[in-house]
Length: 258
Length: 258
Image (tube, each protein chain N blue to C red):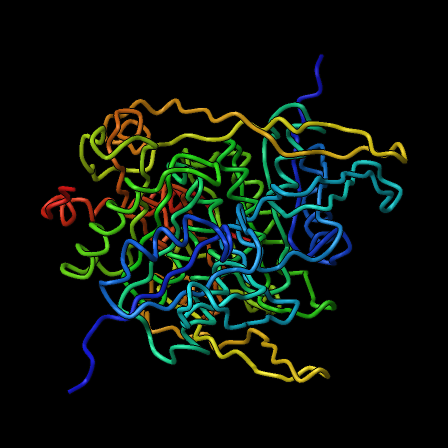
């Protein structure tokens, strides 16, 4: 009889050495046959970037004596593409990305390499989710996030996800006993207000560092930001059909004659 | 009296030397005060990437003797952020991206640097659109695309766009007389099927080039793919609220107890 354990692809954007990736693997390793394919260096803020203009490397690495870890020179999205085409030669049953060091709630979903990897899984028709802990530091405590990731993975394996959707799961940086529960939410309509920091290099040429302030004017109690501020885990179903269907009638009223 | 000409920010992902960018500038230059801020090198496939881990350069360049062109070392999204924060110190009235050398229809909207720049404009609350011609070559004929870009820009300046939406405009590679019209569409549910090409370097280490086949199983006549195949310009309203609202009831039926 065939082995019926589900195949679980695990990736991230913080790179193969990130503690959050190892926490995710630890959280779900008994739920299926795992394969880990992660970038060889941090890829935060990569959005849905793919590598078109240079070749990619894909190398097996020896992690914890387990032999199903690979690193690539590409982006998180490249990792998912390479895993399916070059390693698995089939679609995995589940694609999990994270656990990201830092939030991917509200508008961050757009910039996030973590979420783009999960979205690439969903585009491939694989039930997929991305996980992010609201703590950027390398020595963050992933205990709560691991319990959440495990529960979400079990739910997806059991119930599946509606076609064309994936999950964006964000976890407050508090002890498991402080978590009020998990809340299905919508993406808050928040944004970053940019403030580039201007500096001068030794040759007297200017350069800029991207910094910014997170601005949330969306006070809806059905948003991920509200949930996280009130110590709920936020679970936002995300789609890759970006069509603003409600805008179609407005546009159809206009003349588009050339 | 103040100058009331609209301020138009123009950017792209093929870089500041790309003919498509110059075609876009040429098409709309009399509609307002233009500022061009584009990457100093091609950034195709960059998705919504931002530059977090290295500083950015921003330099004025002399193009056609006009002095409102800038190049950056960043991604298309960085260009929009830098233009607003460091050059304009206000929001432009319109943000146009392109004209991309190659299609950004259907699922390509997700991977596209062109569309991500326009989306960044929309996130900032600026009426925004991205333009793409279905021809990858550097010496493509942009005559049709220019007429389209001009018409769309005029419509947006006149009617605005619904909050939280931008336009994804794709143009068939045919003469203007062959164009059947412009069609408001939804994004076709198509995808790329990856086929990495495997090669061996001189040190006998493998490397991979991303290639792929475009697979469209969505035959809807309301899709951008249908429109383009029938020589219509496709205009898809796009949103950055990625919430799959229809999936919320499905998820709420499940137990999410930790």
